[in-house]
Image (cartoon, rainbow, N blue to C red; front, side):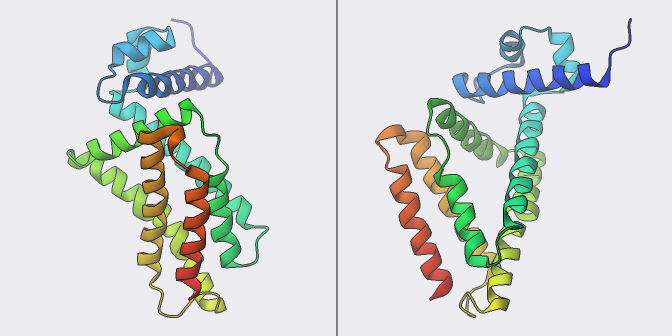
Length: 203
């Protein structure tokens, strides 16, 4: 069997990941099968199992890749911002300005579906909890502590609670948009939520 390059392997892996994302979005995570993903990718079952053990493995890889890219994007953006309040605004701005497409709606629904499903499987729950605590909550806690130290935020604010509130807002708005779609006033709700959250931090 001829050797294949690392670049070839990476391209095949990325093809499978993007095919899986499209498949999950159109069929739903629970309903989709590995055979479906093979069909979407126009590859073989042998190839997909060379890279991924299961559809859970596929989605976790997708999720980790997106999380890594998001955190890197946030941290790069923060380098130009001098205040904690400015960083909070920048985070809201990222979510506010996403393209509200059918594809985006499908991706949100898959994310919610996988999140709920992970609560029923201890190994997946641990992965999701680790991601939540050690990446997303950690990111916000650092910003809020910075705001407390600089005097921007009220001294009564508890960083872990405030961080959890932020992501509850983000996830809640995403959930409503995922279900309701274009009839939901996504941007207006985000604008009002940002103002309410900053008022809470700075009261």
